[in-house]
Picture 1: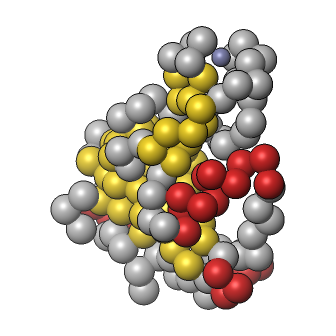
Picture 2 (picture 1 turned 90 degrees about the vertical axis):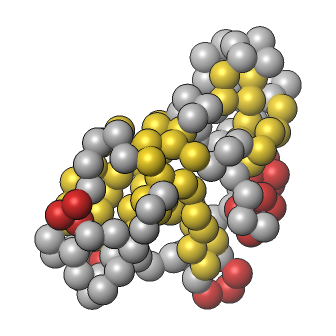
Length: 137
Ligand SMILES: [Zn+2]
């Protein structure tokens, strides 16, 4: 068991097309507000801080650290067959904190501050979802 939650179905909003196009190519592309000099998570076409609608789409490093984590011993519904899995807040080098699934890890050896990188899991119908993996895994 490697702790990957199922992928999809995924609804892709047209206003954040650059994010999805990037994800499909294995790249983390995030909205950036020039006025606030901040990256925005989750992806959207405006800045939730200042309201600007002129966001830029910039490729992020995909690198970050474990900010917080928890292990789910037994999932429910669509997650029931995954086995143990790890839910993590990743703090990206660029600032945003992303709640996602930490994959391919030993849940008993995840620590706060551990370096991680963003990866993308693919499902049916070309669906793709952001995940994270320990740098040394
Ligand atoms: Zn802003």
